[in-house]
Image (cartoon, rainbow, N blue to C red; front, side):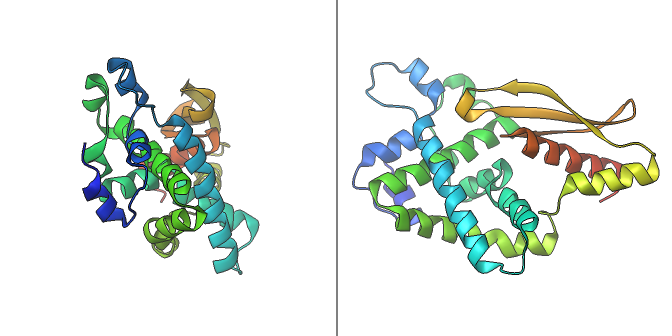
Length: 229
């Protein structure tokens, strides 16, 4: 697999091409292609996730001095969540280089979005290892922190749970309850699916890499479903 096109897109030339290839290698591919000498990308994803969160946190702290902790936390979540990372990965053409099993390659929608998001984190981890923190930071600034102003303008970082609770109490007289309906993945890469109920009725579902993200997604979907957004 020739990754020079991808290197050109992101503006980073890897010294260790195998490291970049590993970033694109999903565990499912390894299960069908044993003996290739390749490793899958989960350790790189673990590292890249930490680098991404540190860079974004530092950026928000230095850029938005008027924001309190809660506002910065909400904006950070909007910048690093699976939806944003998947969109960034898609825009960079990550989909064209993924190494997946035959079954995984047929998936689309939310399943593919999570794979793309995780791969982007693995790429960040690979950049950090192959180059340094500053190169990873430059990549994140170019592709992710640049989205912050648009998120603020749209208000998509606003706490959806608080919004939904206020509307549910006003309109229905009940406080929303969140229930985890599915939990999958290894400890370092959990995925959660949560439903939000008002009284006995389910108003929405959401998914995320943490229960908090899944609850926020469920609240956003419930707001849209009720026309309260």
